[in-house]
Length: 124
Image 1 (cartoon, rainbow, N blue to C red):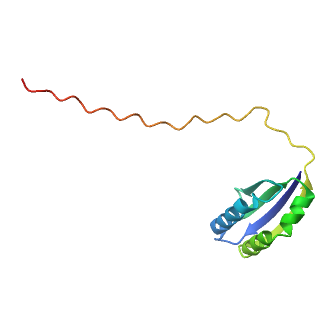
Image 2 (cartoon, rainbow, N blue to C red; image 1 turned 90 degrees about the vertical axis):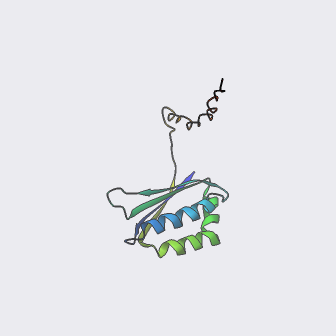
Image 3 (cartoon, rainbow, N blue to C red; image 1 turned 45 degrees about the vertical axis):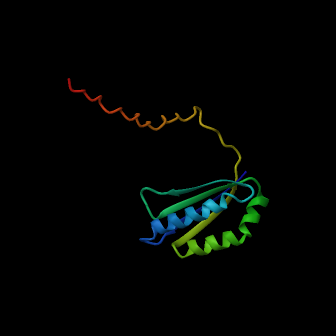
């Protein structure tokens, strides 16, 4: 598996626009052959600092994505919103699942059935 990281500093005041732009593009990118997942991370101490990670099955899948018109359009859109960027391509050597599965959240509460109207008393 291949993991790419792209660390960026977003222009002041453009953070929400950057997030929306990335999310819309990532939804399309996730449908590409070999795409295994993506994440957008933000530094809580430096809220203009973002890192994008993307996992790909093979170097060939990543190369095909990088050569795609979609990736070029995404890069063009994001370049207008950021001040700087640094990219890395890494091979995942090991990845461990959680030692215990995350707890399953309870299902949403179901609305209670409507109560029948009270019975009317008949006059005597």
